[in-house]
Length: 461
Ligand code: NAP
Image (cartoon, rainbow, N blue to C red; front, side, top):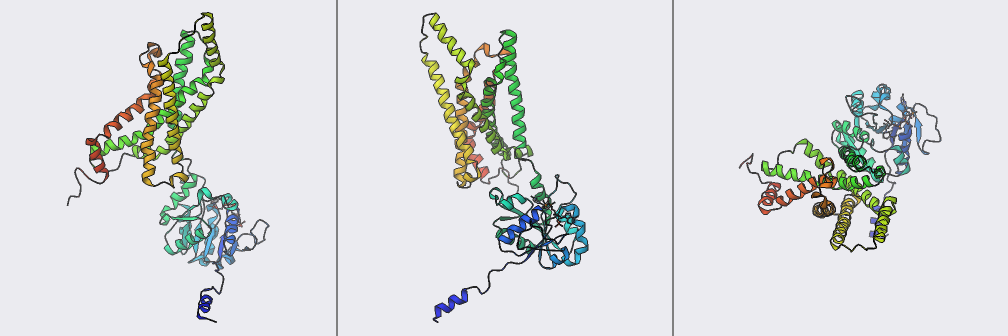
């Protein structure tokens, strides 16, 4: 045998890469799903259960023993049991001493107990090393393998070695562990699966509030006013006309509200002369939900596009066009093409199409699968530069369409301005202040502040 071949022999493993036995307490949905995945990843699994009878639901190749017997076979024990039954573990304290206990439990309500389930387990069994993990993964996703959206597994615990052991299992299952620190983080991790769209609450409530306001505003001016003063029954406006007024208005205002907190932040930083002081809470929260505001704005803009495209199908629109043709025929006179009106109509349509195109581009780049593939500068370019361009185009679209109403007395029914005028207030304010902020005399100090310069440094050298 030559020298090289002996080296190859030396490198070849004598034994297969054997993994340590893992014990799972509880043969319920999660225990079975996790056990199944673990066996597939090469871990010998032993269940600790109240009943040692093997049912056909339990993964094949797994052993089922009493809790005490199963615990003795492994250094890591996953507690796949609801918190309210943890008391049964107290008599096992001696057997569980020094072992790693993985708490995977969740609660039914936010902050249901004064301490987290993992801390409670650690209090019950002070001799064991408790690690919190897996609670954000569902049994169904584990079983079906549809974990694409939630590969992250939050892990926390006071014993670094125990945490590493659990993180190794997480990795072996094809998931990504995310170390959240000590067991103090368990409460937060347990609250994650109970949160209901936390970032969406403010944008959704704001949108619902504004939509209701604008809907009622249009109802009053377009339906009730015309019924009272012009004796016209336009109640059918509720179905398409009013939604098609409210949607673009909402889209424009919400898009402006995406950029307004950035303007406030810049003004605050300029005023304070430093970036090292926290923004007020409301501004922080507002900044954090800009993506959600933008996506809701995009949804309104898309609805506006659909409502506009169905316009030719509407009986009211067909009747109005027909009436115009008949009146021309009766008068034996063809109305000349008004090129100003043609220009205005083509311009606002073109501005709207371009604005909507950029709006869609903004929405696409906010998707994690896309944003993960662009670098920070590219992301900022799209979200900031193209975002502002979209806001300019959409504001211009509304101005060109609704601008004629500013000077028309008929637009002020009950002395109230038309909805298009209201929709322009926030976007115009944002654009005007942004225009001021990009002036070199303002932009230069702001850039310096954002790079760390302070007008009155707290710690001077
Ligand atoms: P489950 O289907 O109700 O199973 C719980 C298991 O606990 C039972 O099968 C039983 O196992 C054991 N058990 C029940 N009463 C007991 C008692 N008095 N004393 C000792 N053991 C008892 O619940 P699960 O859905 O698997 O959830 C288990 C844990 O995982 C919970 O803490 C849950 O919050 C957490 N979790 C679940 C999911 C999920 O998608 N299901 C996701 C994340 C986290 P034996 O009959 O074998 O003793």
